[in-house]
Image 1 (cartoon, rainbow, N blue to C red):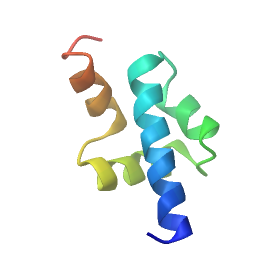
Image 2: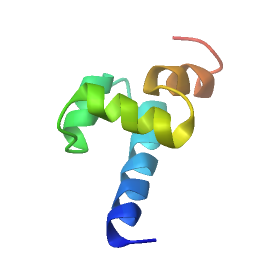
Image 3: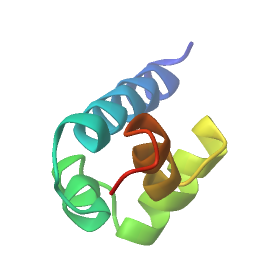
Length: 65
């Protein structure tokens, strides 16, 4: 992995942890992880994980909100 790819993987893992363990919004998580926008974060997350941040959160919480 290049340093840039490694950093993106770290951001993805942090995003997943925040989506599972916090009630912060996708926009807040995008800001915390220093993405330029919530939309860019959502696109990045879907490309890497195959689902949107909201879908991931719902799946990880067993479908409950």
